[in-house]
Length: 468
Length: 93
Image 1 (cartoon, rainbow over the protein chains, first blue to last red):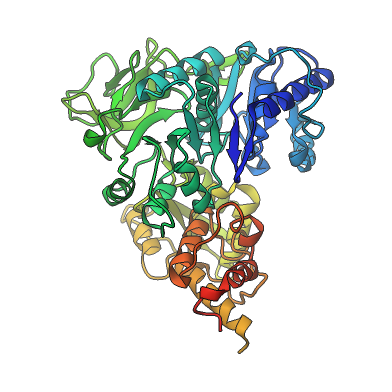
Image 2 (image 1 turned 90 degrees about the vertical axis):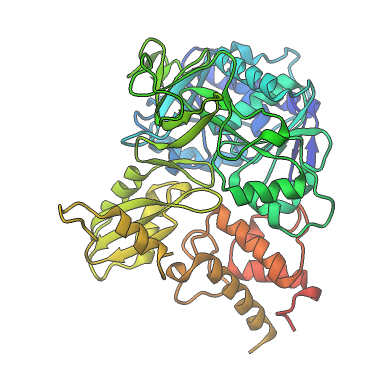
């Protein structure tokens, strides 16, 4: 169990371990020991760490959910009757759980005394169900085995040459695949874990300067802000700073100039786990590549993995690795549609250069990775907009920016529909990261001669004066 | 105009610069939410407002103390936070 720094407070490993054991015992008492699925809403707080440890010491596959019920709309949905374990801080989600046919189980306040003696072992867990953005609809469940998750975490540690006991700082949600991977990495390293508040750049600057942290899992906008905000002390960052979202050259250069540390890109997906990372010597790190595939991971570019394209040519990225997903769905019912001899067809485009470095070049589907590092399906957002009374058509398009993508919507609607109404209706049905940043209401969508919506014109409309 | 109005107006102008003209509520006041049904700021934009406040009003927020969720809930709460750090804030007489 790592000791945890959050909001300026250290939680000791012993304290968290005792909380985990007490919660584990309580779950066993209330739910029983079984191999049935168990779901849990992970709070955005230090208590998520012992909560995760308590639940992964069960023989049941775990479904970690974000503490945001609007994000629980998945395809397929979490099976009716699945227990949903809630910490006391998230007890308010109980009605939402019942509404979805789940069985809420609210735990007692965390106790760090009188803990059961038996140690917890996360290797008992068969695995974890995470969610990826569906390519044509709501998020899909992806089952990853615990042995695979531990293997990829070990591979990341080796590739980044992190020593035993190294601390990890992260600003991503623990309920995300990337957050869980970093948490597992921290458990394997046996070092401290720092959870950064996404709104507190001052606390982040203090944490980054602490010598116990050797690795920062950054987000693009935080890297941007820390590179240009006013400093009140020396600029110090951990020797390893990694990102998994593209950033612009100016953001990369500004951060490097201030902290003397390059921002290293990585490439992963819910289905494949970590594929590649840039572990070149600091002077050779580049913002435009995600580095080379990890040892044991194979990458092929093209329409089929058996006939890869030559270096430098862009195509679909195929991945074969020892730790990719068991399949889509909820265990024991999982499947791997599209699998070719162990190769997984990602929805990403890219190319490998002559030196073996992989560069990403967008998506095959209608998803974007936002500047908040969330994968959002724009089709789902457009569908939600079209369901609003008074809306006759909607087009959702990506919008660029120096720290990553956002997206906006051009909405064709009745003249009396107010923009506030549109935003409120979207907020009622989609989680915050799926809300369009820019919305433009029009009587008639810009269209091409063939009648299809003119997406370029929509982007120009949203990026023009008054568009945001 | 009162001193409080001047402070609120300064913060409102700053937030409006971040969100752009499309998302400015018609009758914003101290109770107008910064996120949700107000200015609809997401976490990236909220952080942008925070950094812009530091630059424009020549202050620095305190780590873990100032930037709590409550301080960033409404226009009025952010104005009060800046007031509490006020001696160096130009907009406040």
